[in-house]
Image 1 (cartoon, rainbow, N blue to C red):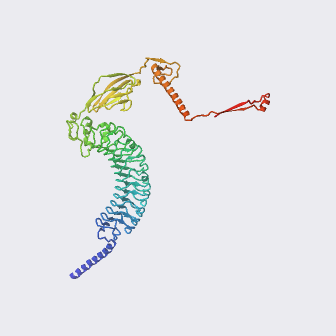
Image 2: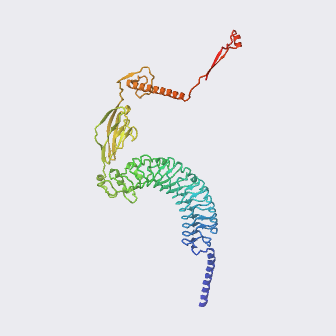
Image 3: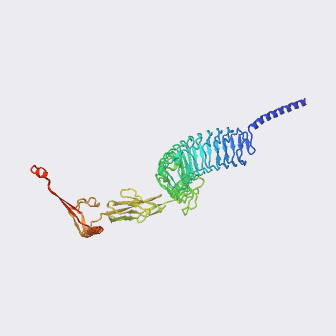
Length: 609
C-alpha cells in the first residue's frame, strides 16, 4: 500500500513537471534573448547595454516593452530596423556611434512613447526618419552634431510633447522645422550655436509651455522674439555672456509665470520688458552685473513671489523697490556688495518668508535691526548673514545677538549738516553758482535738493544736484531766483538747510553808443529787448564793419576786371565788320496814310561782325 502511494505521488509530480516544461517551452519560444543582452520576462525589459554590439540584434523578444541599447558601437539604423517590436514603449539608443538613420527606420513602433538618441554623431535628420511614431511623446536628440533643423523634420510626430535638443552644433532652424508639432509643450535648445532666437520657427509651437535657452551666443533679445507663444509659462535664458540688452518689447505677448535670465551680461534690471508680465511669480536674474534695484519700478509685477539675484554686483536696493508686491515671499541677494537692506524697500515684511543675505559686506546698524527682530520668522537658506564692515561687531552672526543687546549695539547717528549758516548769493545773469551742503552721520547720509517750488532736483540739467551733495546753477537766469532746500537724511532722521539765490538782470552798457531812429524793428533780438525799443550801435564797431564791406566790394570788382581782361586776350585779334541795310517805305503804306491806318516807316538794319 505504501509502495502504491509513493508511485501515485511520483506520477503526480512528474505530470506537474511535464506541464510546467510544456508551458515554459512556448514562452521561451516567444521571448528569445540575444546572447549579449539580459531579458526580464516579468517586466518585459531587454538590457543590451555595454554589449559591444555593432548593430541592433535581430532576435529580440517581440513582446518587449523597454529596450536599452546604450553604450554600444552601433553606427547605422537600417530601414524598418524594429518592425517586429510592435509592443515597444521605450527605446534608448544613447551613447552609440550613430552617424546615419535610414528612412522608415522606426516604422512599426506605433506604440513607442520615448525615443532617446542622445550622445551620438548625427549631423542631420533626414526627412521621413520618424515615420510611424504616431504616439511618440519624448524625443531626446541632445549632444549630437546636428547643424540644422530642416523644414518638416518632425512632421510625423503629432503626439510629441517634449524635445531635448541641447548641446548640438545648431546654426539654423528653418521656419517650418517644427511644423506639425501641435502637442509640444517643452523645448530645450541649450548649448547650440544659434546667434538669434528662431522666432519664425517657434510660431509653429502653439501650445509650448517651457522653453530653455542655455549657452547660446545671443547678443541681444530683439522685439517680439516670442510674440506667438501665448501659452508659454517658463522661459529660461542662461549662460549667454554676450547678452547685454533686452529690447523694450522683447517679451511682448508672453504670459509667463517663471522667467530666468542667469549668467548673462545685464547691467540693469530690464524693467520695461518686464512690466507687462503681470502673471510672473518667479524671477531669477542671478549672476548678472546688476548694481541697483530702483524704487517703484517693479510695481506692475503684483503677483511676484520670488526674486533671485545671487552673485551679482548689487551695491544697493532703493527704498520702495518692491512697492506693490503684496505676495512677495522670497528674496535671495546672496554674494553681492550690499552693506544694508532697509525695511522700507518692501511693501510689507509680514509676507516675507525667505531672505538670502549672506556673503555681503553688511554694516550692522539700525537699518538691519528689523532683520534680527524677525529672524525667528525668516529662513536664511541655511547660511545666516554676518556683520562685516562694523568694527565692533565684525564677524558677528545675526543669530548671535540677544534681545537685550539689540538696542545698544545696532544704532545709528542722525545726520548733521556742517557749516549750517544761511547762504545768500547775489550774481549777475549768466554766471554759474555752486552751493555746498556737507553732512555727517552714521550711516553716511544722502543729500538731496528741492527747488523753490519744492520739487526734487535731478542730477542732470542746467540746475542739478551733484553727486558730492552740492547744488550747481549754471548760466543763472532771473527766474532761477528763490530759496533752495538741502535735505540730508539717513535711517536715523534728517537735517535741512536753506540757501537763497538772487540773479540780477544783465545791465545795458551806454558808453560810445548812438541810436538809429526809424530803422527796421528786429523781433526777438534778445529776451530783454522790446519791439519798439531803440537799437544801440557802437561807432567803432560800425566803422570797422563799413571798412571791411568796402574792401570786400572793391576786391570783387577787381577780380572781375582781371578775369575779363585775361579772357579777351585768349581770343586774339578781332576784326570788326559792319553791314547797314536800308528798307524804304512801301507804296501801300503811303497810300493809306490819310485813312488812319498804320503807317510803316523806313528801317535801317545794322549787323556787326
